[in-house]
Length: 148
Image (cartoon, rainbow, N blue to C red; front, side):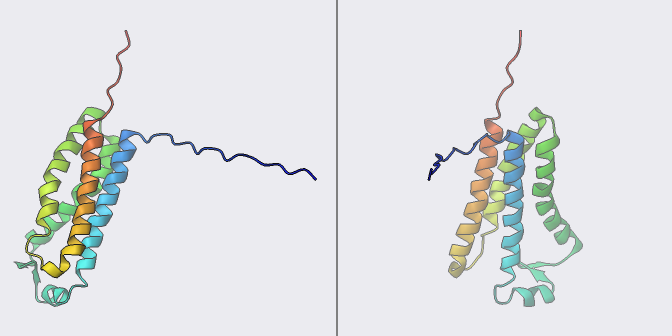
């Protein structure tokens, strides 16, 4: 009886393109952003506040909801824009939007109770880590070599 043994082969670890990295990171960021807001609904009193027309001390209004939509629309659009814009425009757009979203992300924890610090430290920490990945990928976008 012959036993054939094969050595395990290495998996191909082909690098992702910058565009794919950016689109994937923005997608992950968007999901975290949405789920943090969703899980926030489980906090005692949150639904009661919503039913009484208040979100984070602000009266629910068309302007407030439009602002909330804009905050989530930007990462959603960045998925497509990162993959489709010309490289130079995509790079600059990613650098600018990422830099703008760092303070927005940190602001989301302002005024929260200390018993929720673990929840917000983890969620905002993950969002900030993804923004760092995005910024780094855009900053280090490979340059095309010129042919002579």
